[in-house]
Figure 1 (cartoon, rainbow, N blue to C red):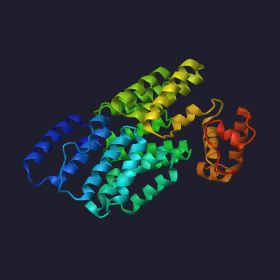
Figure 2 (figure 1 turned 120 degrees about the horizontal axis):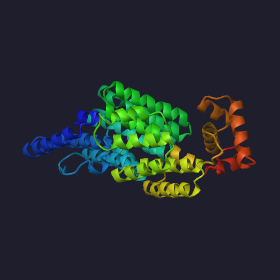
Figure 3 (figure 1 turned 180 degrees about the vertical axis):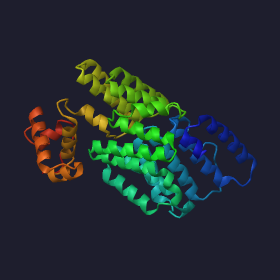
Length: 367
């Protein structure tokens, strides 16, 4: 089941699920293994863009299982809710279950869910807490978890995005895609490239176009259409992709595509269409919880800001000093000062507080 999900074979998922359910009913010794299968099946469905079908413990009810098994079920549910874009709910489920489970259970296998929690926290803008999750995961890493390394890399990319280092996040997401490709995991490669596209990468079109012919499910074609629309500056296409993401149950991706449509329309001076796209992004984001993504930040930023300027202003709005911004973005302090000076001039801001408010960030610490 795991292999079928990683290579994108939807038909194999279905036939294996039928076989496993039959075995689970007829064999008296499959109690715990039924939970393991539910996890593998749910993860595969999420990976292929079928989150509404990814009921983590449907039909698996065992009253005589230890408490850790039911915490395992809560972790599965949190992972599914993250995939569906229900970020606040996912954080609650994952955090509660992970804080209570025993690391020794299943030999530490469930520590893998720290990846999901890290991504969820990063999407909420809690970068430090997300990094703590990845640190805990590193301390409990097992050899058989190496096939999940692309997801650890992707979680790191989300952390970079959360602190405003969007260019770095794009590079990390693309590196995660390369890692997945080298491991023979094309479905996970699609997920990594889709994330890079959501961060604003316009170079994913060709590879995603090829992966559509390899990976089944709904994620690959939606991601390919997303990449093509973003690269072409097609606002209507991005709105169509947003609707497709929502239909397949990926609300957070729907938010990002709509936010990117807003920017595209705004740059084309189509203010009415831009407002429509912005309203859609906000409405769908409201169903996800307290979420912060690069696409939403870009849609909120004044059009006069360049990409690098926007990153610098976002970090300044988060309370970082000029030196801290320079270290995070690998720039000189003088370059950071120049970006802030020019950004303030473009929006008529008199200080860093006013500049931060220009893109919706409150300044917490003076330089």
